[in-house]
Length: 400
Image (cartoon, rainbow, N blue to C red; front, top):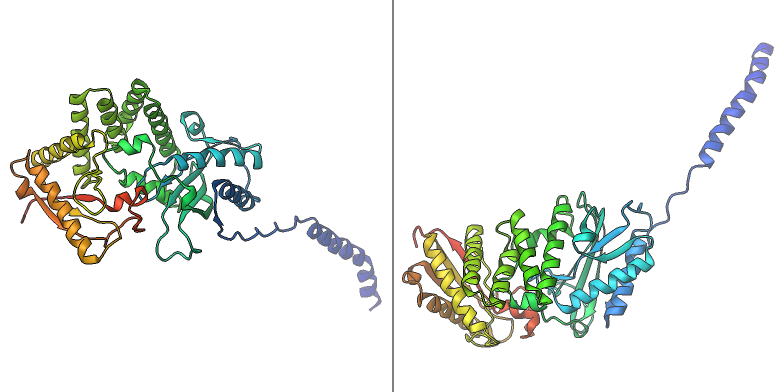
């Protein structure tokens, strides 16, 4: 018994040292990071308030995220998630948010997306806007949803995503000149990938950002009347993406603006052929509210005739058939809009038939009223122009 006591006496200090060492080791562990404060969706009457909210929210959400070694972070224009168009307000939001974030999250330098900023970027801020869906819970009034997402360029991982709402009265929905002139809506797979990237559905974004930066630069040149520079930019994009619809339509618009009508028609033929190969055409035919007459702004009626001639000829050459579906905005009775949407489709088929002998066999018209609106507000202005559309869905002619 005495021997055991002596042994215990000798090892007790060792046990105490060991226990104390363990306690000391436990004591120097860093405390867990503080929880990120919850961010509530808010509603803003002006862009300044919306930008301040987005800046504060991004800062809070990224508080415990290690900063990238590359400090330049490109910021996208706020593009329409529904039509892929960019407005002057979308571009102004891009500028304001980049400046605000640079001040708030220094040393990170947020700059509008261009060729230089996309080069070696490790983070990127993606941004879009959309008309809210009927299921969204909103305050009284008319709102536009703004969404931003900070992503890792190399992985596509979404680091954080923020939504907020801006009073539609403070947002100019008129497209910028390039998108206003465009003969197509760019709602193809590339557009869907851009929207999906904000939900973490994309792969590496480096190539996407590089291509989008080339487009932004070429579009800026076009809108600044630097047509030679714009043509070169769109041509460069086609070297890596030959059937890129924005590049093709950019060439068409540049040729048309500079009076090179034969080259413009050839570019549009290629644009239509690319759409047919992809299975759909999104030709942008703008109808007057409540009717089948086209918007008669500038030389649009002349261009419309060229477009329909091209559609008829290319469809025939590729031996395809097309379902032409008319749509209407969400105002008026369902019965009225059913008739109106069908009349729009029929008027397009009649126009195509003027230059295509077999159009009546290859093109079938139908109307969907406002069952498939994209915006769905019934505002009957630039914000829901895409709802007053005609869609071309390409198919094989078997059993036509």
